[in-house]
Length: 298
Image (cartoon, one colour):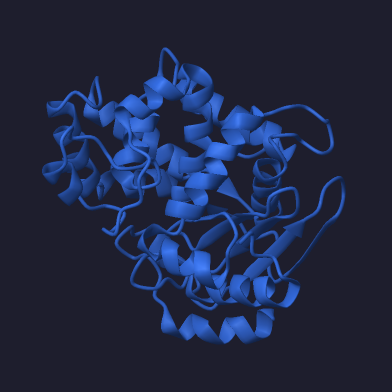
């Protein structure tokens, strides 16, 4: 399946609007499947590191919900899918109250990052990384400063979103400080094994299978999986739900995290993207897997 799916990399392009991401090899495709304990299989360059990008939105949403609870979080961010691009400002202008439709688009993720508890960005990022460490069992995971800086220097649309939301009371504090945190969380580096383990914990009620620790409360994992189904693949989420049918979240690095409820965690890396920001070959690979092994939740 990997070989067949890799043929589609030619149809995509890397995310060169972030210069550091534009250096990726378009033809790369890797997958890891984690089934708990030491049971992790895969194919491709499994140790190659890449950044989470928008997949980090799932992690920060979990942390914000643990920090503040549902009522507060969803007073600032909605729960509805959007048919607009992930970095669009259109719905902020046309909806009353003027808050992001969901936490998986950039505006919503920025609002969520603004909620993370901490006295400094170092403390807030440390808490995000600690959650990633607890989920994966890998304490060496950190962020890539070069990718973070590259994103910060080109974050013109995200700055616009932040200032618009600040005008309407959705975010508070200094915009540049918020963008500094956001770009660093997006630049958290993992490999496919790590990504599959993140997906596994979300799939299996928030429990780390090695330590049996409840890393994320059960009710929060249900919220995460629901958003992954309805909003996780940008404005391809509806088609993805029909063709693949598993909770998943993509990032413009070319990563995709899949969480099959009470089943496997899946980590995919394929930096050739379609025009909506999803890995072209990664989506084909997941579609083949879902069809062959009947993985759809529907």
